[in-house]
Image (cartoon, rainbow, N blue to C red; front, side, top):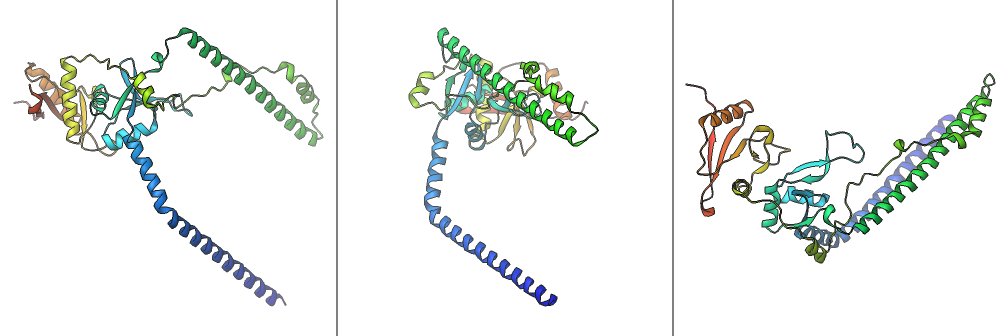
Length: 332
């Protein structure tokens, strides 16, 4: 009888397994059929949405003279499609006190923002400090925000008090189970908790927004908020911009080279995958420099294993930029 029962149990288990597998195959077949039927329409909609996002202008928020990108879609678009790298300067909402990994906004080089604007791929909009000049509205916004903070503080204090009560009740229950311990001190503390409990404002949680409001401007709003380019275009800035523009046209990725004593770091591809090969130093075509400056640059390039690239735009834009590489080979 035991053998028969065991055999029956195995047979029943095998039948259940086969039934489940058949149901899974049926569901998978139905799902694949539905997905195949929906594929053309879904692919069309996805393609249309993707094309709309790529053709939509990037919104560059100008805060003073600093160009910033706030929208995550804009950050991805300029890096993947336009080779614009920039620098993340914002804090992360969950880890605001660390500086190892930063988040939005993305700070652009002045040349990066200007290239986006000149090519028609970006629209400059005013920063938050210049969106409203009416002091009365600012006061109303400040009062509304203060009320919101006070309401949040009261709500968090109420939740903290309830949590404290639950902790004391749990401790009291554990003491009740142990006959050797008395729960009288816990009862007294629980009865006076409401009057003695104080929730400090320093423990209050404040939301850190990772996206700014009013970023989805309509075309008429973008025109009204259009910002004038406040960057002074002196000779040095023009030289830097022409060099940056020429290097980008050749497909190089570019970041700032302030920590290497140059103007740009030049990468053959995305900086996440490649090391910089060159340190670009922008110099006017007719400028004069002592030989010691070039020796310093050459020694610097040798120490960091990069080639120094002197970049001098010609007098006419049609002739392009003249590049001269410098490498240290030793003293004679």
